[in-house]
Picture 1 (cartoon, one colour):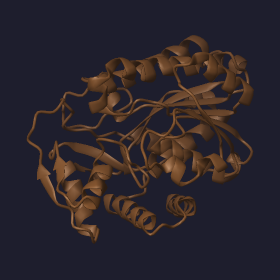
Picture 2 (picture 1 turned 45 degrees about the horizontal axis):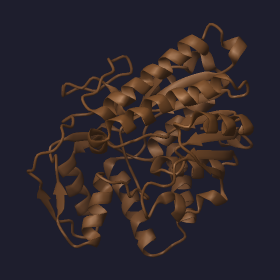
Picture 3 (picture 1 turned 45 degrees about the vertical axis):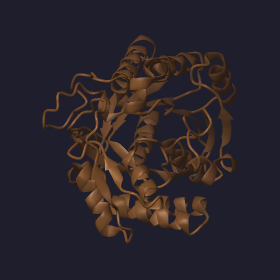
Picture 4 (picture 1 turned 60 degrees about the vertical axis):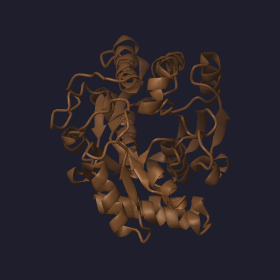
Amino acid sequence: MNKDFWKGKKVFITGHSGFKGSWLSLWLSSLGSSVMGYSLPPPSSPNMFSLINLSDNVESVFGDINNYQNLYNHIKGFQPDIVFHMAAQPLVRYSYDNPLETYNTNVIGTANLLEAIKKIANTRVVINITTDKCYENNDDIRSFAESDPLGGNDPYSSSKACSELVTHAYRNSYFSKTNYPEHRTAIASVRAGNVIGGGDWSKDRIIPDIIKSIEENRPLLIRNPNATRPWQHVLEPLSGYILLAEKLFYDGVNYSEAWNFGPNKDCSISVLDLVKKLDSIWDKKILWEIDNGVHPKESHFLQLDISKAQQKLSWNPVLSIKDTLSLIVDWSEAYKSEKNMKEYSIKQIREYESYAQ
């Protein structure tokens, strides 16, 4: 990552009020970028966006990704150099109850963004953030590479696969590598693992559920204890997105494609093992019970093959699962101690940058 690259760059981030979007907006604004965010209001209370007073650092617009005209007007007015598309309905269980909302946001929302970019000449880089769940997953015990088939057995997963297909179609139809000297816009998609970190209060996510169970002095209910996920601290994939944006800016032809940014293999562990590891390093006792109720189907095994990013981008994850959980514990303790969480979050970003050098 070249910090100097980001000074003065105009960056448009959809979904900036969410967990990952808030961290990315804070990181880039701390590097000197001019950031505009476009998103619905924060989805939870408390939330990272409000806690770090992000509106003091970025030009924040609350708007719906499905309102094309409003989205287009703000992108046109801002004239961004780089766009990160993070706005999404991000929850598997919620998608079962709200499939139309999920498809509208994750599929049509992507098309709205790319259609707006198509009409604006200045934008050099667009990165669509999807998910590791976009692959056709038959619970084979293997890592998914970017060349594997897309799929999805639930509305969320399939909507993200559709978002990938929309990105692919727009890139080939309007932003092709052949015509790159004419349009000068590079478009890529990125797929991360199960992102965790301080500042996440989202529903149906393991770390927020653990913290809530501790606060309420009750056992954590674990739905799928043996499900294996590629857990990664939020700063790991974000560092990959930032590096990829730099590459795309200078060499759009060779990097306009799909990329996996997953964690180290030691981070791919079961839900129950994650709970036990967090319990072992935190001085707060975590109680848990297995929830044997009937739940919507979720994949049992997920892991990403990151060899492409390692070989072509020289990107590597740097945090072990212990490092990842320690950062979460430290952030949570700082929050409970009522520290300035903007300053503390930037401190964690600077520490991560030193690890990743």
